[in-house]
Amino acid sequence: MTPDLDTQPYLADARVRLRPMVEADFGALFAVARDREIWTIHPAHDRWQEPVFRRFFADGLASGGALVIEDAVSGAIVGSSRFDPARAAPGETEIGWTFLARSHWGGAVNRSVKRLMIGHALATVERVIFLVGEGNARSRRAMEKIGAVLTDRVHDVPLHGGVARHVIYAVDRDRFAAGPLSG
Image (cartoon, rainbow, N blue to C red; front, side, top):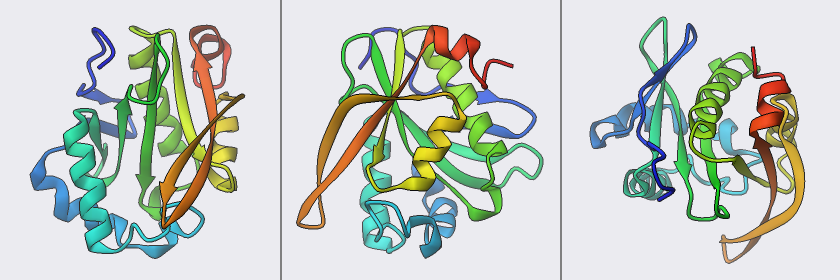
């Protein structure tokens, strides 16, 4: 783990609440994740299937950094995200594995989640990275909307008997302070 980074914080704003994921969240999260449309352009396009999602969920719990995303008004679980320094360089942490119910697509909720998580992380680390499937245009646009910059780094992930190339975006303290999430 990255020294001193609390990877299980409670974070909130007017749109979302983020809290540590627990085993009891499986049913509510799977109810969101079983929507095939969420995963159509994602490298793990079969994550809507219960056995695949169960592994994803277990990996999130084991990581010690998985957070549940709740709608701040209704209290409903609408997705998850997580902190994970395993693939990050010194002074960095990764934010990823984020998925949202389609009812919460469109930018405002993702923007809140990323603003809260990046702001929290940058109090401890110098840079936050995001691994995005090379062909995942929706997620790549989302990275650009929050002010993340495409780096020259890539990471290949074994997936579906092949390799899924991921590009790496980054946000450092200065970019965050001056970027679209600063307000």
